[in-house]
Length: 377
Image 1 (cartoon, rainbow, N blue to C red):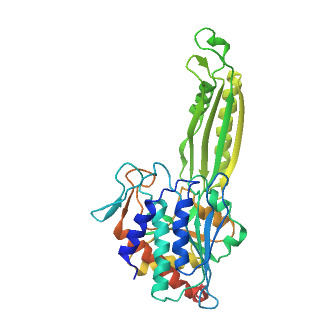
Image 2 (image 1 turned 90 degrees about the horizontal axis):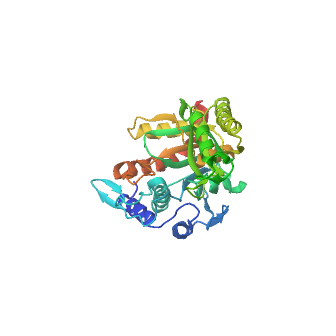
Image 3 (image 1 turned 30 degrees about the vertical axis):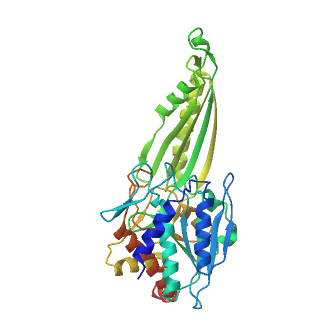
């Protein structure tokens, strides 16, 4: 039912607009025009600190009474290298020219939502109330979603288009804690009096070596991703900073993991005489949507009707779905085919892209059966 050519062309237009995190202003201009052309009023709200744009929110009333309000979400920001993307369509797949990412994460989701809205209007299809939310700054900690006011969360359930495999219905995601540690040693001349110094980078390295990192358990991971320190090779570094994270679907396991990382840092500091300062913050909270809930049953029925062998699963990554669920909107993550995201090998098979978009449209149309689904339970 959707217009394949228009869907692909919209995606190509979107990825050609640079929109690294906190720099989504230009893509917002494009999306505002598109949403207004559908007759929707658009608000830009919740600008994160340091950003040039807020998230876009629009509402489309439904025709039926008692239908659920569905929140449709995709994020507009991309990761690096994401400037000057040149999409190439070859052998049934969309790719970049190899110098950048493609930006299918998550402009494939944005394009899918736009095409669904256009199809509904063009074919005058009945639909439930729709709250459209295009978030900014998702890739750097879900900052756009976190900055949204309460009115943006007024919906019965959410369909978050931010996945890859079109067979998957993601109903669970972990809690993540971020860890920032500063090690303060003592500076000294590296060639003349190295024994008088305390090498902050060495202390940090010893701590990292004692940490449990990688996959800790099936549902728990941890990583140190950044380390910075020192001013010159001939100076024993006085200061070093490391940044990492821990994630888990199990709060007790997550707490133990964070404590183990902290202990490794404090122990290394005591052994060397360095001072260690640690800041731990929760980036987002885990969610779990019940498999027998109406949204999951609706999604499963649609995928099954499309001839897809669906899988209900949990993910190890975070997304805006974490925020929507935390704010009381049970939300699922759905895919539209993006593959090898966050790399220059990222690609988007056109067939999967089209099918994923058709699935989204079918879920929206099928939501009119909300009351009947409840009665079947």
